[in-house]
Length: 145
Ligand code: FES
Image (cartoon, rainbow, N blue to C red; front, side, top):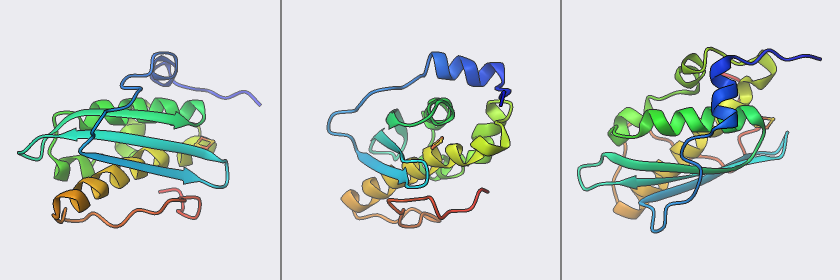
């Protein structure tokens, strides 16, 4: 079956931004989807004001997971942790001019891994981030938003 990926998806798949690790990251989160077996890890560098200075990801995931994480990490850089929480998979998909319906779940991997990294940051610093829930390791039962 042929898939139609937007030019933006292809660009971020071929040249993913922010791939890598951050040493001594302020927050690091890993989530997976047991249905497809894909895994995503996000690292965040957050300054004393709670602003995300850097974001990187590593994935054992499909092309759509790579493209959405690439865009998502670009979108949260320079944002406060609260603003980063509002970068949903829908916003990421819009920034990519959409994804084929069967790949929508892949965009959740990025969103959830960012939440997991924010959770880790909040735990380490003993703070609560309004609206942030404890993330799951396996997001396969999360319906497609
Ligand atoms: Fe698993 Fe895309 S197929 S994240």
